[in-house]
Image (tube, one colour):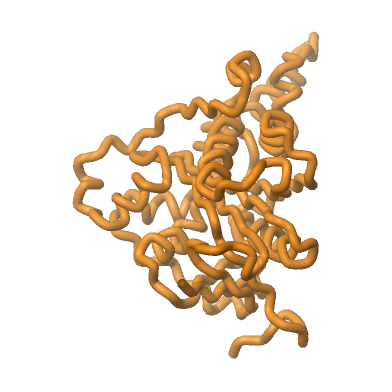
Length: 277
């Protein structure tokens, strides 16, 4: 049985922008096409094209690793769709384990006698590197959070973003991204495909023509059911990539299907979003 988070009115936000990037799709429109026509998935190359987010200056973009490029690219897509100014939008970035390629590099470098690290790789190694590239490139002066919660990252990032959006009465960009794990991590992080998505939220009623409204409730973890995605490749992406836990919500949005979407927050708690159009 549903239980409100508090006795106050439920937290509600409107969605005004979506970005997406992953294997076989480079933006939200292409992912929508894949949802609507699952048979085309058999003909697609399930590999990712390295994004080149124009918002990052060329010199900085050359030094940006794939997780940063993916996160900034989908953030830029969502911002452009919303028509909002980046300076007005706070942001929450979420990644299950961050950049495992750089983590592996740093661990190996520190086992050498010299223990010398590349300054650029060290700069990019922090978990909030994507948030840093985004805020600097876009001129954002609002708050920027970074969340890492392994397979629960998507739900916790949305929880944080929605609460911040309503409590501070400001637009919030929620960006989720995880790239394929380095081989050394595959036993604990079987992520073979990269994925990123961004949702731009505004306070409920603030937009003239929002894409959808999301209202928050919470549920027990037992109510979390994997979405019925249209092809095996998307099923695997949802199962293995923490950021791709948002695929069920994206599928619902693409179909304009009202109803519940549930994200696991912990072994005992889950986040239920009631989606309406």
